[in-house]
Image (cartoon, rainbow, N blue to C red; front, top):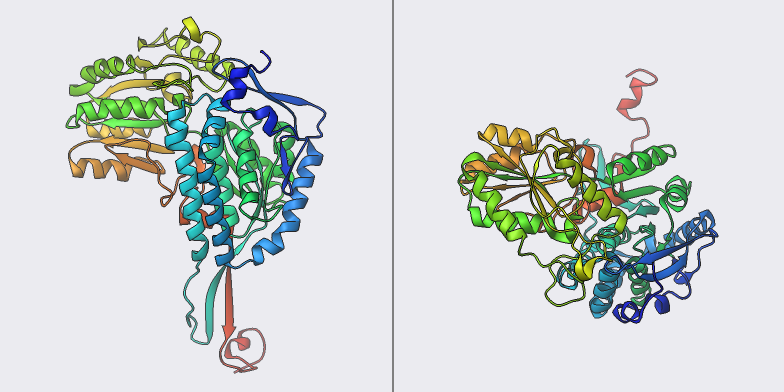
Amino acid sequence: MHNPGNATQDRFPAQDRFADGAQYIAGRLTKGTSGRTHTVVDPATGEDVLTYELAGPDDVDAAVAAAREAFPGWAGATPGERSDALHRFAAVLAERAEDFARAESLQCGKPLKLTREFDVPGTVDNAAFFAGAARHLQGQSAGEYSGDHTSYVRREPIGVVGSIAPWNYPLQMAAWKILPAIAAGNTIVLKPAEITPLTSLMFAQAATEAGIPDGVINIVSGTGREAGEHLVAHPDVAMTSFTGSTAVGKRVAEVATATVKRLHLELGGKAPFLVFDDADLDAAVHGAVAGALINTGQDCTAATRAYVQRPLYEAFVEKTAALMDTVRVGDPFAPGTDLGPLVSHVQRDRVAAFVDRARSYARVVCGGEAPQDGLKDGAYYRPTLIADAAQDSEVVQSEIFGPVLVVLPFDTDDEGIRLANDTPYGLAASAWSRDVYRANRATREIKAGCVWVNDHIPIISEMPHGGYQASGFGKDMSAYSFEEYTQVKHVMFDNTAVAAKDWHRTVFGDR
């Protein structure tokens, strides 16, 4: 690795912005106390971006204490007051859009056009949505359901939420964790991935600038083993929300359930892309390339398994490979770049190993290598299409998390839907057909939390995101997320003013 060059600093001056540390506790940046440091690296160049002191258990304790102290005041604010604060927050995020885009591209390797047009606008929209949703924390209408009592339902905040976010969408995942939690009146401690903490810290700073009270949002930048486990196990944390791999999610569940916490898990995916023989082939090809390559394939909803009905199979493989070959791999900050590097050389090598092993049992149609020339120092990998793999093979069943699409044929509709469901995951899927009945059947029978028809990837703030099976449980975004971040309380009033009620005789005395 290198020291930060002028180009790295010009892209985003992380060293200057986080000179006071990479922990954000009670409204200010501080240094971690673990005694160890971590260096954020630009995956496009291998240059150092920021070296910071990692959080240890003491930092987690301080962040949880700040959140606990802030909770009564924030929970006691009116929905209108929380809504106003979130509207101001959305405005600050919009004003800082270019800063956020550049920081996200620098730490993740995302092309600027992706961060400018997807990550950042989506985050601003999430903030605006939850600003409005904060006023609509409603329960069931009051009514006399027993005849002698009036019942109603309250939704109340849970307390301190301890959340852990992944490295693939650091800004959006910070928003998905923080916004519904605080809109519902909770306070939060978020642990971003230690390799991509920049935009989570900036997000918390923007909240403070918008007038959200100190301690409502806290960030601890540390490792999962040290800071993450301590946060999940903390007795003052009432709920844990985790996004990441299924394997780590199982460990989070073990730790969280030991203290009987509310638990929300958004885990891995292996999204099927089901193309029926009446589909618009060109639309399916374009959708497959975009859906497979977004964020360099580092997306748990990315199209990873394309099942194509036999009459279209060969043409789909040929056209998809040809389109993938036109994708421009390069510097995320350069105009015209379509695909940046993976998040790290470790991740690039992991993806390459999947593809290399697949050569013994499948056909690598295009890609399958790291580019050289001026990109050799970065964590780049070419868009890759693999055909003729068996359904039970590693590249079909395991989450690769890179720019790799596997294509398999199927014959009957029954077979296509069966294959689409034949993994442990169930996060997202898509079906491609001009026949409304065929497509509707696929949406009913594919086991996934989101099924697109004739598209793949778009998400909106108003609709929920979450999975089935090994992809976890619970919902991000939408009003459904409040089901994760609120307690439902039944309140029941006696309307009779009778001391000796008739039902008491079932316990003592006679009629």
